[in-house]
Image (cartoon, rainbow, N blue to C red; front, side, top):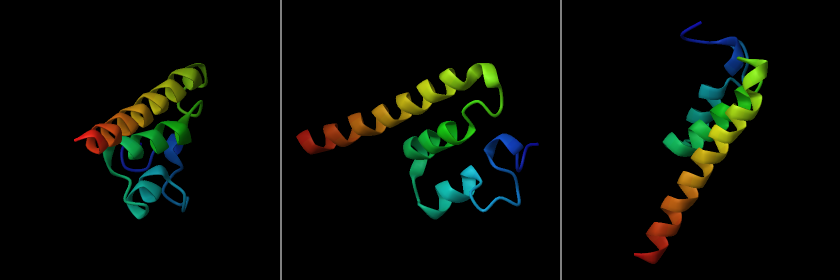
Length: 72
C-alpha cells in the first residue's frame, strides 16, 4: 500500500503515477497535478472533486511560477 498503491495505478501498471512523473521529469507541482488527476475518485470516490481541485491548485501554482519568471 505504501510503495505501489492501487489508487495510483499499482506496481504492474506501466502508467503508475510515479513512473509517469519520473519518466516525464515533471517535478513537484506538475507531478502532483498528474498524481491527483490519476487518482481522482479511486482512493475515495467521495473525494473525486477534492482531488481534481488539488490538481488544479498545483497546476495554477506552476503557472504562477512561470509567469513570475517571465516578469523578472
